[in-house]
Length: 510
Picture 1 (cartoon, one colour):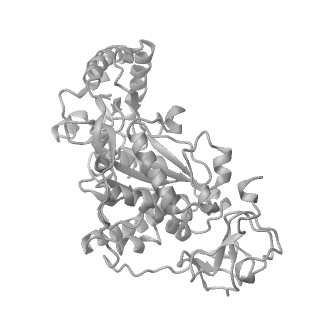
Picture 2 (cartoon, helix red, strand yellow):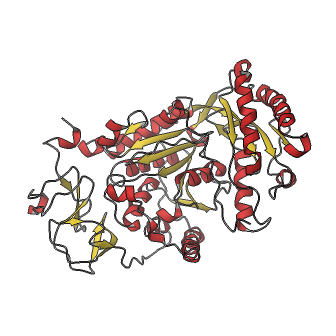
Picture 3 (cartoon, helix red, strand yellow):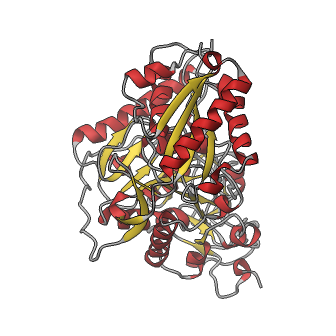
């Protein structure tokens, strides 16, 4: 018998006393009596919403005790509530900066992992060699170097090196040499160059691009004579010469990176990037709040957790501003929201471009609903800081980094900002990975866990069967420590991570 068909599991759940909807915990047939005596008027898919009482057109629909939109038509009690009768509606909130900011108690006992201690003071969870490119025009050559190293089994003599990761992308030229777009890419490349998960970096450019390697070096973005080398294809004399020199430089860098060995490190050295993708109606009930518990545990141990995806906290930002440590931090978040409203408008988009078709099939209807579930990943810790995309995180605790909701792009920014570990919740089934940072996948429902167990690391669907959020959060935290110490994630074991470097491209392509 499937978990979702268990006769001892209720058909639906009310998440908050103020809610006027229920959430279907499994597929509900028409004519089923639900809590409160409501009888379904039609079949309701698992994860979808059911009217708990009659709602008039224009009235707000509440989930988690918060507004997720307004009824676009009269809705009878027991009816399916979704895209056909629920729209955005008004959602202005009281930001009440800092009103709910309350420091978490320190952890009762110390927690450690086995990591790579870098000269910068950061601690890596992996020890890769990186081939970083300044421009798309150098991408193929970077991969040629990595392929040549694999054919020669270059790393056989360097057992402490986890692998070679070519970091290629679609930008670096055809852009302005000043302004927001340039600075964003600059921060991203510099951040990867300083990632604690790289034991050493070889940077390859073409030579004539807008994003000049000497500029990265002159501005001290990339400087470490032992762990960093660079070259351009034009200066070296073409592809073959660049590949040959690249192999020679990789051997030197591998010898340096191989000196690193794992040693005990405090959990406070972990910087966790938190993502959700392919969400469903269960994500905000199971995987996201469970990750929130793990995030709080990490903060209590002195670590850092990063929430991102600005377009996917839209409508729930007031829950974060109320936890801001001070007014300037809270206002910084609202400034980002204002920027995004302008950004989408001038590009003929809208903030309610989400949920995606897959999200909607999973039961999510408006961006407000999706955002309220997404914010749950941030737990309850005070919001200690708000950062630009790929800006170095310079403080401990729970922070926010600006990014699009597009997962590969958002994780790229978190990695550039210093994340050495990623936790990724999903309800529909995301299969990506993010070298050089290991990514832990958290399944929101038992059906996804059954279908895609080879891709999922944690089953959060058992929360629907009674496992507490606290117990699941502790399970996730313990896994974070094991993965940080070298345990492979499912995405790592399958070789993911070579195509997910996606810098945020802002501005005109020229």
